[in-house]
Length: 386
DNA sequence: TGATATT
Image 1 (cartoon, rainbow, N blue to C red):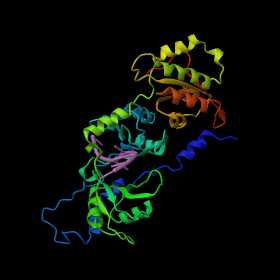
Image 2 (image 1 turned 90 degrees about the vertical axis):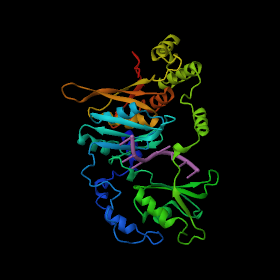
Image 3 (image 1 turned 45 degrees about the horizontal axis):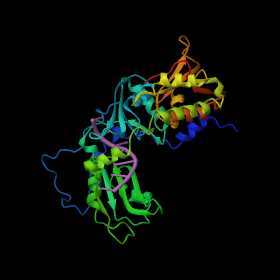
Image 4 (image 1 turned 180 degrees about the vertical axis):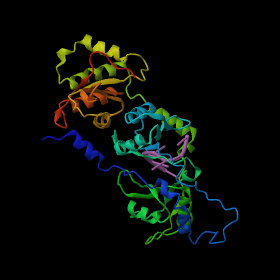
C-alpha cells in the first residue's frame, strides 16, 4: 500500500477552518444586527435614540489590517520562537507575539503574526490555516483591531436539558450573533451531557443580548430554565490553584540524564533500524555531548534531522506539514540551488524533544513523499543547537 | 466552569 504523505497531510487538513472573510463586513452590519437582536424581556425596550448615543463598535473596515493575523489553537508547548519560525517560512515578519498568562507565563494557545507584506499574510492563511501540529489543528485568520467590543464574549450556560446536542445549543444561541465556538461538557465516564456548556460569540454585545434573552428562559421543549452568564476568566483562578497547576505540570517530562541517555540509545536503534554497529558508545557519547543533553537544565537544546530525497519543488511548508504532527518543530529548512531556487534534494528539520524526533524519524524514514522515498535521520556530523 | 479568539 502506498499511503503518500501528501495525501495524509490533505486528510489532516480536510477539516480545515475556512478563512473568515467577514472580518471587514461585520462592522458594516452592526446597525442591523443591533436592531435585530433587541428582545422583549429587557428593561430598556425600543425607545428613542439617545442624543449622545455612540456605537459600542469600532467604525469601519478600513482600519482592519491586511498584514496582522491571529493564530488560534496552537499546541500548548509551542513557543513564540517556534511560532515565528513557522510563519517566517512564508515571508518577512514585522512582529510576532504568543499570548501568555500574565501570572504563570503559560501559553494561552493563541498568538499574533504581523507580516511586512499583505500578500504574505494572505499566503499564510491559505497555506497554514488548518495545519495540524501535534494534537492541534491551528486556525489562521485576519486579526481585527484590538477592541473592548470583541473581548469577553464567552458565555457559561447551565441547566441545559441533558438531551440537548451541541448543534441544538448553537441553534438556540445563533439567533443572537455569530458563534465562534461552542461546547457541551460531558461526564468523562458515561459521556452523558452534564447540562453545562460554553458559547463564545464574536462580539460582546451579542453575548450580552443572549444573556438578556436566554437567561432564566426555557429552551423549546425544556422543562427547566437555563442559566446564561459570562464565563469565568481563567486568570481568576486562585493562586493556590495556579501553584498546584504549575507543580503538577512541569515542562520537563524527563527526569534526568540517565533517562535521556537510555532514550537516546533507543532512538538510535529506532532511527537506524538496529544497525547499531555504526554507532559505538563513543559515538553516542559524542552525540550526547554535542547535543548538550548532559548539561543540567538543558532548556533550548534541540535535535536536527536530515531529510534526504526531497523533490525539486519541495518547500518549507511540506516539512512543517510532515514533521509537525510528531511534536515540537522549531525550524525547517529546504536547501536550494542558488541559481534555480529549486530544492537540491534535501533539507533539515529541528525538533525540541528526542522522543518526538525519534518517532518522526522512525515513521518517516523510508516513507514515500510524492514520488520519492525519503531518507530521514539525525544529522550526524554536527548538531544544531537552538 | 473547558481549553484557551484580540496583543
